[in-house]
Image (cartoon, rainbow, N blue to C red; front, side, top):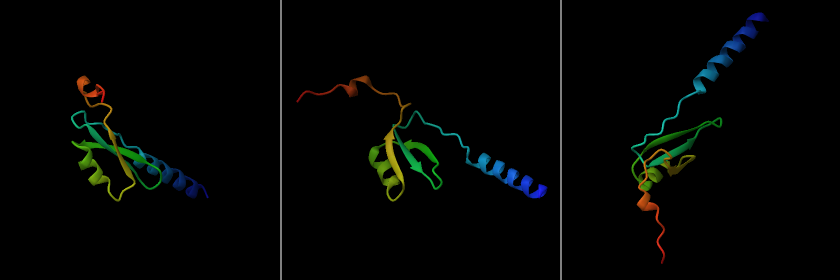
Length: 83
């Protein structure tokens, strides 16, 4: 019984260590892909230069594209145009 208890504790510790991964945001890429995996985990992959490139990679996956929060923006690009 004691051996079973240690075995369960050890396997739980190994599973928890495997699920903890660091996420990085590449500041050189403006578009990120957020992907959900089995079990509820999610991660960001900021490796896309355009929205179309990201959407093509997200096709058929439980994923969505979003703007990289660490990408340096040009302030003039955010000025709203009055039509």
